[in-house]
Amino acid sequence: MQPAPLLLPWRLRFLPLCASTERELSRWLQQGVEAPLAVVARRQRYGVGQHGRHWQSPAGGLWLSAAIPWQLPLSAAAAEHLPRRMAAALAAELAPWSVGACPPLTIKAPNDLMVGQRKLAGVLSSVIWRGSTPRLLRFGIGLNGRHPIAPPGITLEQWLQGRCPGFDQLLLIGLAAIERLAREAESWENAQIM
Image: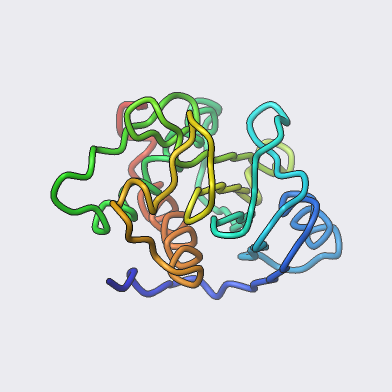
């Protein structure tokens, strides 16, 4: 199965090991590198979850931090719902991989992608503002792929009953989810907030 082709001109930085892709993305942005940018690591020592919690990040998952330029209006309410929207976009990109008896993916507010009561992925989001105008959207994706994990976690390999996309496909799924969110953004202000 092939993810949809990417539309944005991504600048990628691949790291076999880092402390945190979030920290690496911040450093890259401070150097003035133009978005869209993404930092992806095979492993993280100190992956960042919600409220700064540690996220287990062994080899086999997708540990991604990305920034995209933003030119559309963004209300405070829409910004508040970015984590849930990002989780929904990631679920939509993963849906074609599920077959037969795979349980459905659900979103646990504000930012977790779940299989039943087990956590498959967590997402982070933030807005970089210039005054009251959004300049960049940042996203972090931690997606359990194919690695040992203790409950209440679950991996893609477990959810997909022994199958799991390879690392390159996981990266494309993550970037495609960010692009999906960006494409859907034009309807946010006119639609009821999730």
